[in-house]
Image (tube, rainbow, N blue to C red):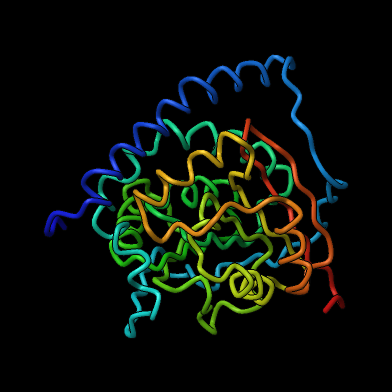
Length: 285
């Protein structure tokens, strides 16, 4: 929905998109080939958790197929996603070259922990393509995709229908304020390239803790503050003034352990991109 001229959306946004595409072509693409051929080895931090043996399973939310639940009361944070509303239709096209390598390498890790009956929540799902891909990996269960942007969640729902999946449900909701029906329902939470835009990651971490069943795992895929990523902060803020900051692994660990989680593991999957696996274990408060 095009409105009045906006320097963030109409000038800095396209310039930042070009920077991301260049990074994908000159860094991610060659690095992916080196990783695939076992030439490049990236570090990890901590001990990789063992997959849980059981999952909740079931299709409580998608018994009747795909459904869309829009919020009746706009969140106080809604202004933070207005740029995503404006660009919902163009977002995936603009970011595809950058995201495709990240998705490929993050899913290599995620697949080791998914079961066919895992129930998955994706936070800030955008156009929904990652959530749709995950739904195909959990045919005995379902995926609930959540995004605050009304236009993004509508687009995600349309994309799911076009891909002919039926084990998905879509909620327009703030990541800091979980709809009550979604509490204690999930085995896995997936969140990609979004922590930098949350104004209160502590609140989001607590929400994720309460969204998981008595045990479960959060998968965060995020850039971390190395030199190259730190240099991109200024253009990122120019493109979207609600960009907050980059989080290092130590800070993420502190935030999520403070929210009640019991274990934290981090692995660099591409230059400058890390995946965190954060575990909730029964009887740990």
